[in-house]
Image (cartoon, rainbow, N blue to C red; front, side):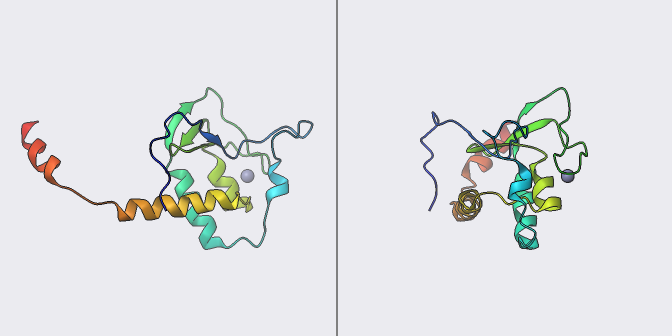
Length: 130
Ligand SMILES: [Zn+2]
């Protein structure tokens, strides 16, 4: 099942943004830690997060809310979701579990890319013209 491609007007879904403890409109990563989350799945999710396209760069780095290390200054996207580049660290090093709907999204995107038809004709035609 691939997601619709003709929905360019839809907003990007924010993922992995945290609120201060006094403002609970955004989640706190402490509440999402799953110490028994399978390591292979965490590696797979973190790898996907690390390979988003840069959507924005900010002046200062954010700090990890759980260990205070410097944790990136850019926002990344896959065209559907937008997350801070440090989100992979939360997943990998702290076991911060992301919603199942996002895990399904990664699976669907990976499957859809593997299943795409491949066509060399454009490359054959245009490579010699540069
Ligand atoms: Zn950390």
